[in-house]
Image 1: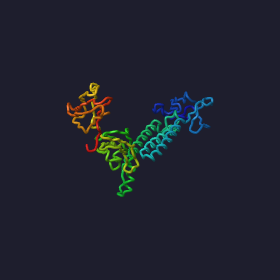
Image 2: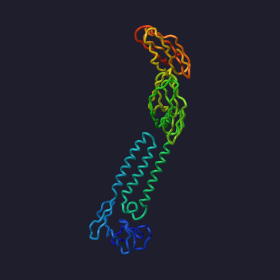
Image 3: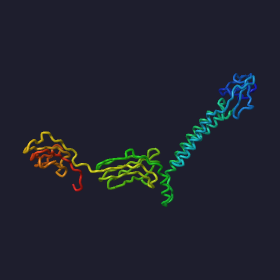
Image 4: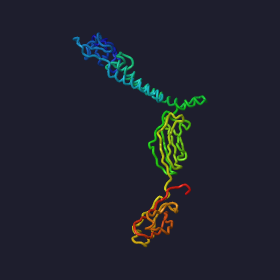
Length: 367
């Protein structure tokens, strides 16, 4: 049965897929049911003579061209894009690890799918313009599922491959497995610290792949007399390893830390520290204006509050700008309300201007 001099339909099947009696069928080019009389409102005859490869040309009843169903060029362009990116990901995978081959497989499958759709005319529901077989919808679903499954399978197995170590016991085989084991080390967000002796900073850094240990990664300190590293721990989160540790300042000076793989092929950025001892005197009160001396022979008893409590004479100094004009005597220390109370007597002994200043001493060896 034919659509009146037309053979572009599936004999015995309707548009909705139902079975039809002999003499009826489906015009697959326009998805229209053909009546028993062999009439189709969209075309009168088909002739592929002289048409381009992969296309079917419809002719009207008077022989003029009515429609050409060509392959969809847009599908071919997108297929080329997929293959180009697949090649790029393959090159990247050679440098950073086999996990990227998962994206290569994903894009290759999509590229093949698009090429097949490019060769399948738009108005025919079956692949390659055939009158039966696998439909384009089923083919697309299978390809997308295969693309995602291949990506997940390759990415998952590649992570396991990077964590494998060699079975040999010689040093060269151990180093080779370690180099391939650490794929990346993250960077510190803050890289400069100014701390007092005794202060600590906690750090957290991302490493790849998962399940790394101290056998693969370590924290390098430039001067162990200034910085101490402790509480080193490795935890796994998904496909990465989280390294945590604490740095404590134990001496004055400058030092740096950096996280490195054992073989030194992977490293983080460098963190620098400037360390000094904290001041002994943390706070000194202000003088009252009433302490000012106007004449030779005048005396004032000065009271100054300082922190912390229990300071000694070694912890601060009283500076006199001119001892021929002002003298300082009767210096005494006491404690009151968690503070150190300093008292002393100021006497005017000469004409001119002079000032008194109290300064806290910094930490010194032996104090």
